[in-house]
Image (cartoon, rainbow, N blue to C red; front, side, top):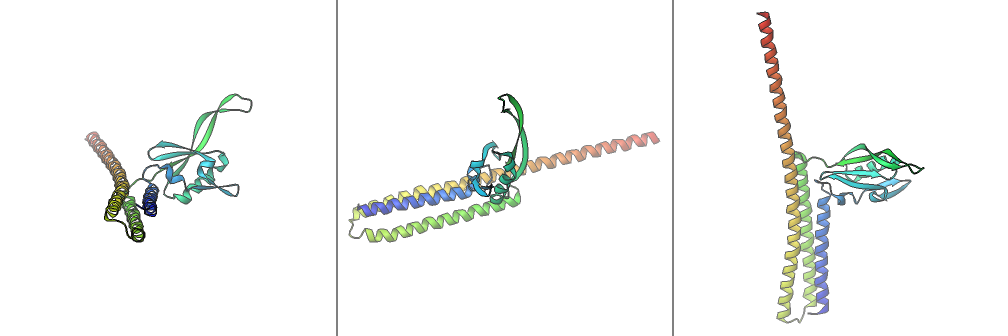
Length: 240
């Protein structure tokens, strides 16, 4: 097969790979769990300049749904919160502190309170459930259109580059293209389905918590009613 055809085939593979990677990145920014990737675009205003979040903080995962973000300099904590809010206003932020061992100027160890921002992903309630699913579908449809356009563009190039090619080489190219598209279409669909499952799991978690709270409320109301009934009964007995 001609070198120009091989190069065009490789370019198609790169385009499909890039669209798949961008699709995955966009879904990670439709946050359900705490994804480090979602913080990559955060910039913090420091001394009149914008810095990447990782340049002015230390980031640690507390659990699946929250980050602990420690500014290198405590006075920059408000700016860090501002930078996060500009990119992800849906994230819940709470200033907390923890005690750590620090080294004083004279070299002695001493306890020190360190402030940090606890960043928690919002719950997937009924409203957010619908918003997330709509967002995932939109990103999927756009990725699919981009991949189809890449194939159409490659088709036009192949039509020109393969003039005079023997049938055997054309069949090889056809099979290779089918395999390539099966690979990246499969990757795209896996990313899509995994994200939908992540949303379903988080929504079910929220529903379970709502049911537990409602059950607890009902139990408390029942206990209160029983207590009130007993009090009324005792009061009536006293009167009698």
